Length: 159
Image (tube, rainbow, N blue to C red; front, side, top):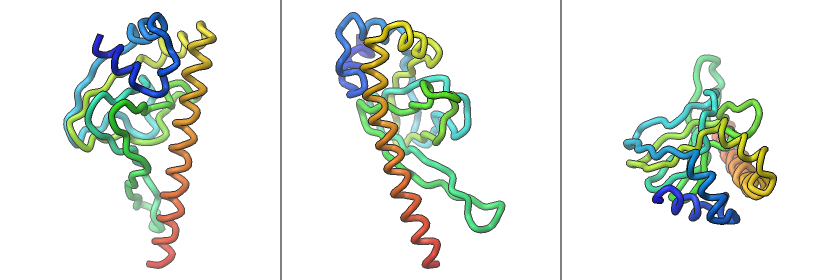
């Protein structure tokens, strides 16, 4: 029941009715992570789409530096309660494009990626509602990433 309430409060799933939320809830597993824990890493297989119930996460990327062997982690977004992360779970090639790191103790719902993709394909209404809202998350993360990269580029040209 707790997970269904958390799903209802997430904007990506707000258009789903109780029956549809029940179907989605059946795909979730509750998980707890301590501060500093990496939930998933950039390039790893996207096994779940996540909803943050409580806590805070940093969405980070590795930026190569001018020296060939060096790179640095840059936070491109912060995820707060009731937000979704790990959208790569429903987008080919199903590999996370960024890294998610807990900034504080965090409770999350992990929605099984394979089962979620099957549900989105089998139920056109759920698929449309979820993917149309998830597209907004993707666009926002890409915009944030663009701003961070521009800022990093400006900083590196001044150094």
